[in-house]
Length: 150
Picture 1 (tube, rainbow, N blue to C red):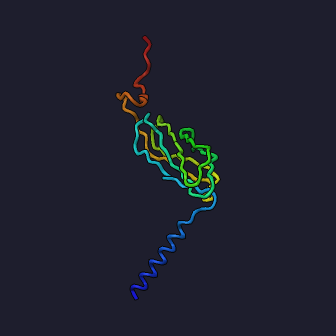
Picture 2 (cartoon, rainbow, N blue to C red):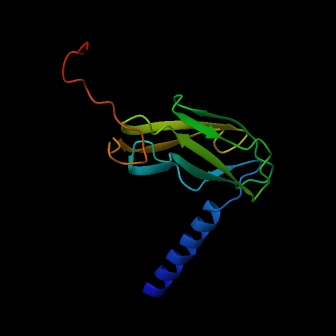
């Protein structure tokens, strides 16, 4: 009885797995990640990252628009069609001159049947650059007194 139950359980699991792996008819968008975490980076550091888009559908995928949530987040998407099974990169550049937490999004608009509008995010924290360091942008220090005329 245990063998029959085990065999039925395995057969049911395989059927469920195969049905979950169906190919989407038409274009379909899949990303390697939906969030990029910079961790803690220094002011003025390289704020570039990349998301890989794969067309898991049966027809060409067209990305019509990539829009950052603010002017400090600039995405760049390829406008050429992504053929079925092929991949393309979306590069995102964050302006690291701004000190503080990073929590921004990029909205991808495409002809994908599974998700025509897809939101990806970047997160992390920009810490002030060391004033003695050669790289980075120095932080303006508050004045300690009134200016003197000499």
